[in-house]
Length: 343
Image (cartoon, rainbow, N blue to C red):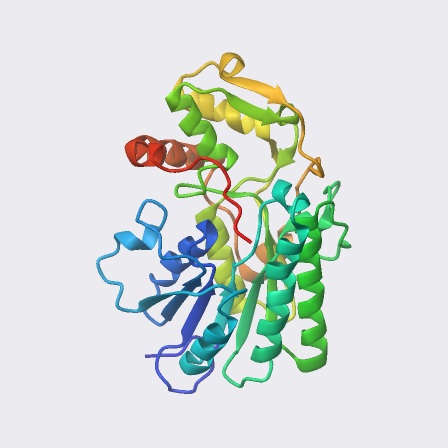
């Protein structure tokens, strides 16, 4: 089998890619995309037991012979995780593992820094001494910029507004120091607000669909005026794979749709899809601390260098989420609809 161009010409079998945070919404979709590529062997690592097919797209596949899963925690099982890496010798690691919720990060900021920065420091310091790693894709966040006003490119300064964003910005800076000092093969991606079927149920798009189907009122923080750049999860996954395979080591790439849209407008579209009156189904509540007014970033670099573009329209993506909720509503009813923080 011909080796992928980024891997080289060493004939040692299919390269192994480790996906950290494989149980997460973004991680599971990336695993599913990788399994479309027979040239790769895939290892998923997350801190919790593997989830059900309700949340993991790849679980519907008949053949998972090229995939293995390990429940390992960055904070509690680092020794075992590093032993696994040294045994499996992955050619690439893609790291989705992070504490990623904004509002709770004000309550226990030390938990966010422990996972997103401190544990990462130990991981990277170990990996930089190994000879097997060719590429490390770091999943950052545009929230490190704070409110995004104007044309925000990859050269914009970091200006975080929350402990979560500060912990991710610190991680980005840490990785850059290892790149400069030790030529650590990092590539970085910052994608805007991902959504799609199988997303965490407390997120605004699936939660809106669930609440509307259950006859409950959807609360809009700050009236839903914050502008987001909602992008379908598969568009983000294909962009991340393009960065991993074609991106220039040491570079940062944005992934975003063509324009932003307010949270209020998104919920309005979900209401329209379900035939529910927006005015009676929603109510405005106070804004969350540190909520940035807009997340709209420029992705022309990924489009020009990698040939990437978003292909799933917001209308089609929202319809997918609504159909997923409708088809699985009985099982979803048994799930928690609130964020459950684990340090």
